[in-house]
Length: 192
Image 1 (cartoon, rainbow, N blue to C red):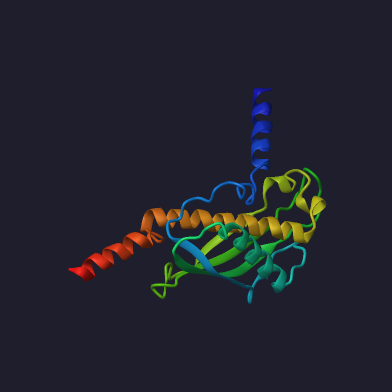
Image 2: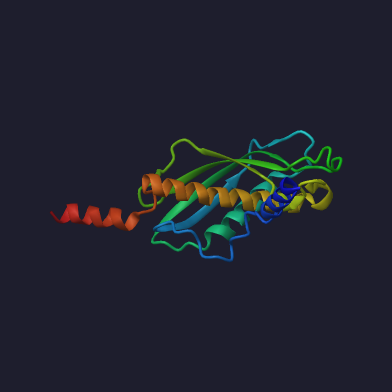
């Protein structure tokens, strides 16, 4: 009985997890980060098995909209650009409740460009794979409860959140967005 209660509590907690659930809160600190250009393309997006259809325009618009929604909260002193490529997707169709509840998936490649340095921060694109949030229908499946547009919006919001998490990790490890400190150091060296 205790296991059942713990499982139900876990499902309720996971159901609340959504890529947009924290947008009303303060943005996670990212130093001098300001998103200037947010570009998504889908020239070779692969539709996965048993997926609903989505056009390249729908894929790219959903991704750029969700990315803009998340990153417009940042207003640092230095400009950065995102190059995003949709590599593959699955927008789940209705399945068989409890037995077969397909999940939606989005796969993107991300490149981050530093405008001031005129170089890519990650020479090799970083691949991100996201699944739909549990609030999309963990037992029944989102194919029954959501339209393809709603599934794509949820996936794009989860992708934008994953991009933010990646940037936070890279900033902590590599100092990607600590521009003020970099510029102060360069000015000090130039003054000597």
